[in-house]
Length: 111
Image 1 (cartoon, helix red, strand yellow):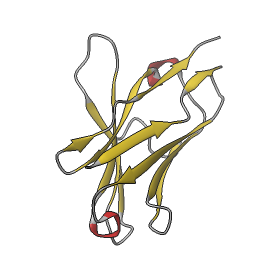
Image 2 (cartoon, one colour; image 1 turned 180 degrees about the vertical axis):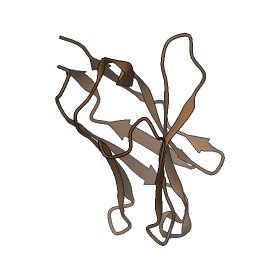
Image 3 (cartoon, one colour; image 1 turned 135 degrees about the vertical axis):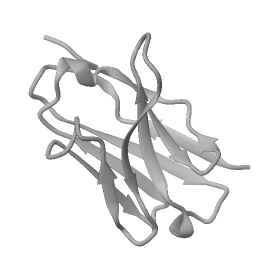
Image 4 (cartoon, one colour; image 1 turned 30 degrees about the vertical axis):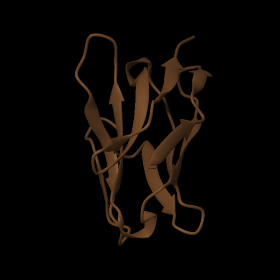
């Protein structure tokens, strides 16, 4: 059974930081591309960042220079370090591998 479980969301002030984690089980993690998506209220789900099995990364223009995606194959985990957070980053963040999704973790950026 494939499971992706996100954690690390919460309420943070503008300019603050959060680190999201995605714990993965049930598939060959080290040979899988991993991505983070987000969905804000009333908006479509959008790609935030992706990391390939070789470590290559890509980012949405809106988060470049502020967010960093990483992975630890030994721990079967993916991460999203989010710095200089803005109110517009408020959304539910989802971890994705192939056709599999986690349930998401809420990130709220507000003063």
